[in-house]
Every structure is written in C-alpha cells, then in structure tokens.
Amino acid sequence: MLRITKKTNGQVVFKASGLLTAGKRVGDGGANCGSKPLPGVAQVALQQGKYAGKLIHTRIVGGPTPKPFKYFDKGSLAVVGEGFAVLQTGKIHLSGFSAWLAWAAVHLQFLATARRRVSVFVQWSGPISHVKADRV
Image 1 (cartoon, rainbow, N blue to C red):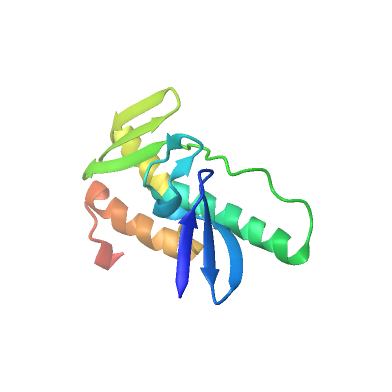
Image 2: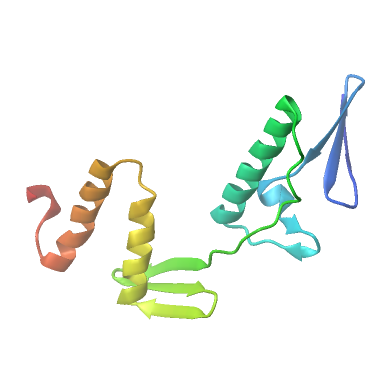
C-alpha cells in the first residue's frame, strides 16, 4: 500500500512497504515556486526536470545539495497564424511577421540535427518564396 502526504513546503512524502522516502513534485504537479504559481508551459517542466536530475545525482554520488529551485522566465512565443506570431519577454513585446521570425529561429534552434533544421527551413520558406517544398 502506498500512502502519500503533502507537506506545507511542497515536499511530498511517500510511504510504501515500510520504506520512507521524501520527494519533490515537478511539472504540473509541482507548479508552485514559493507562493507564486508557475505557468503550465514546457519551459517550467524543462527547468524543473534539469533541477530534479541534479538533485538526484547529488544524492546518489554525494556532494553539496543544489540551491532551491528558482524558475527563470524566458518569455512567451505563440504563433497566431501563418507568418504572424506574438512575443513577450521582459520589456520586449512584438507581434506580426518579426515575432514569427523570432519564433521560427527559436524552434529551428531546438531541432536535433543541422539536416533537419535545413529541411524544416526549406519547408517553411516555400510559401514565402513561392517555391514548392517537394521540388527543392
């Protein structure tokens, strides 16, 4: 039988088969940083996952415990339509084609290989240059 208890500091305690283990929630289940709720976006989950990995590593191999998790808001990007997006980061607010170019650059950067980046770029630039992507 598994019993789960939530502490006031966000820590979750699991008790199973007589073993006691303490853990932290990440992702949507751990979407609080202090008293401020965090947005339900991928960037929160990525940062929390990286932090959780460091925490697990230090507990296994030893070493100093990392500082408490702190979310760094990199801003928001959203595509509204073809060639139109909105961007908000700090004091910068863009909309339209320039925001779409920023969105495209960020998304191309996160593709795994250079070959994939070129392929996607050619597909995306087809409507702009009036070239069919399947002929390139």
